[in-house]
Length: 331
Image 1: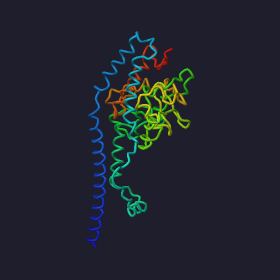
Image 2: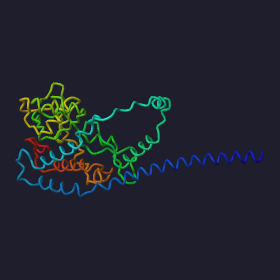
Image 3: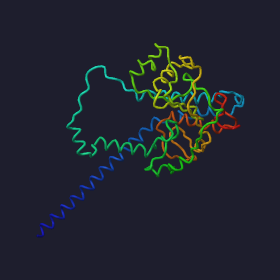
Image 4: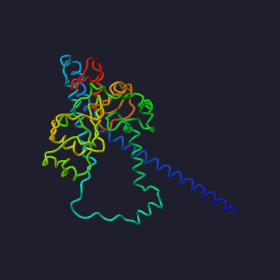
């Protein structure tokens, strides 16, 4: 009887130790993922942001440009924003396989996954990496399309390293409204920053709305296309239709459309120039700051550059214009 009680106690202690071991392994995996996320900050450096910002500050303080319809700082903003969106233009493009056939899906494996929806190890590790990443670098603000707003702080942020910046406070700093009719400027695909995401290789290369337009000599704003222009980002975004056409126009730097149209206008013009976030959120290329206190780290220094150009323009003492329209509402 004594031996039975002793064995039962040992089994219970063994189970407890197993649970503790399992918990420690999970914690170790979280820490390893967190360390991996921190290591990726090495590529970020203040040297990528500070020199350009200093130049923008100098330009914005130079009253010789006060009367210019296209201020040099605004043109640098356009160049940097366009470069950023050009780099992600084809990230959704599906390239067809030219050799071989795709293997048929394993129906048995699919059926097993339906019966047993428990995530596999790779999925769990991916979740852990994403969670660790967001804890350090925050998460993208996607409520307003593709605008390059700073990241939002993740719910599980590292309170030992970062000041709290709740999603409610973040959103309260953003104020948008339809732009006045006077701000309805023409969009030039060869110059302006445009966010477009073509997805079909054949449609892009053969259709007369895509690169085939070069052979058909026909391109235009089709009826089902929807464009939105956003002040003060000076950015045009494209809806579900028209991504291939506008991508071609951007690639060939066409300011005058081949179909005979001389001007292209967005369907909607929005203005976020009065948002408090432009004045309170900054970056040095390594950290994002709220009121000069870090709330997360920078994962994309190009976005940090764009934001700091905007921040500097919005705080300029005189109107900084693009196509004759002031970006910083000083008039």
